[in-house]
Length: 111
Image (cartoon, rainbow, N blue to C red; front, side):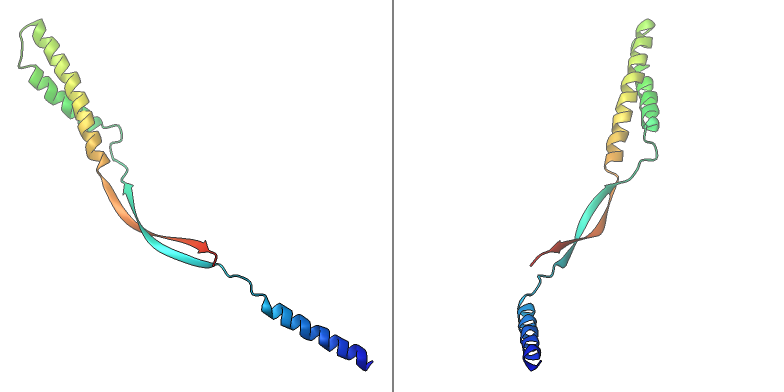
């Protein structure tokens, strides 16, 4: 009886010693701040205002040249060219409409 108790105590002591020597690696979390640039959603995504404004200006400029049918053709070309130019100008202006935020990014790192 005493012998089995001593064996049990000895086995328990060995298990405690062995289990204490194994340490599990703990993952840690590392965070840092990142600047993120966002583009604002345009109010006029089809760029209608730029197209119409450019077409009006192009038509007025084109109407100053030629006479008769030539005047009509140049005016029409002015309207089309001005509309395209106005559309592209508004597109470039909308592309530059950005804002920046700071976001915290975290990841787990093993030792």
